[in-house]
Length: 426
Image (tube, rainbow, N blue to C red; front, side, top):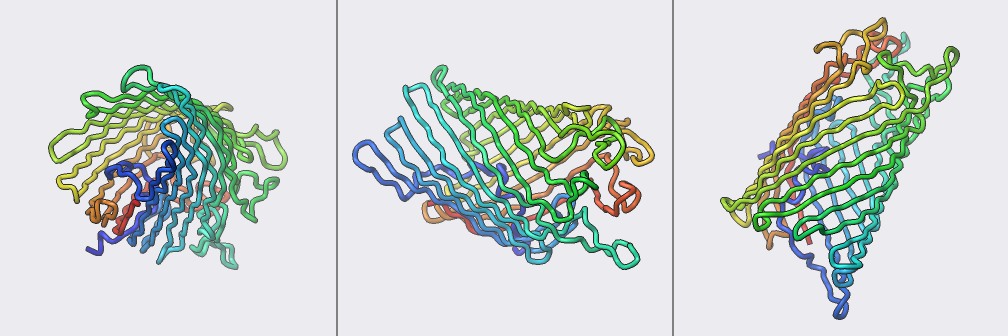
């Protein structure tokens, strides 16, 4: 039982279980006269558990998760609504030191001038704090200049973000909808005290960036709403504020003192297409959801970070009884760079596998078992997840790759975690 009592660093923010519970009207729902309605939905969860590995970090230990969402909403019939969102999600580590807290909020406004048209604006701002994380890029050295195996702490993985997106959504026919949207975002990271933009501009670089986004969605329902489908296509333009572009193959930036002038700041254009189909059947009140997608990242300078990626997932949700919900999900990803993405040389060891082209793949399996009580507004849940990432990009070895630093990072890794706790929705 204790194995199921674990909390999962990335699961409470994952979309794997989104929509798994039956939608219910919030308890706090008032009619303000004949036309206005005010509601105050509140939901959250608390869990205790165990985490083995966090991306490239080889850690193991207990963790405690807490998440809460509040979204007061004011509506005028079906023609206007405004929502204030306030979310908090935090993870506290018990053995290893990797705490993470995220607080964010925003205001959403939707106007419906005619029955088949909706106009909306969604804003978002927040702060992510990861205080004193052990930095894999800052090993500690002894008096002889050798790595001690201890990593120096840093706040440079913390950041604040702000952005917004507007949309126009219309019904092209009954149960078919078309939406266009556009927006922009900014993310600003904490600058590490050891970052030196003049002498070592490629070391401990703050990943500050902003991006513009535009796209379109087409969605619909059929077969008495048992089949739902969605096609989403979007384009992002991403510009980094302190990260320099890299040469094809070698990855050089020429940003150090002396030599050639530095490359321009890094810019990407990213195309993403997503397909989603869900089918709800009668046996066990089950639902099957299939997702597939394609993404291309175009490095606008020399193609070092140009890649093509395929993604896919399948999830199965079953509710054999009103008080029991079971969700299982598998997702995968395959990414392949171009010939400009890597080049063997004096400072670049050969790729571990493949035909001279950098590539990676990832697989993840997640599962959730939830027992509902008190009119399904309170749940006791158990979750588990496993993820494996593989790449032929060479591992970082101290003074081998890269030759000038004592980095030690294995880019191929496995993570596992499990959690159990209580979730509520009011």
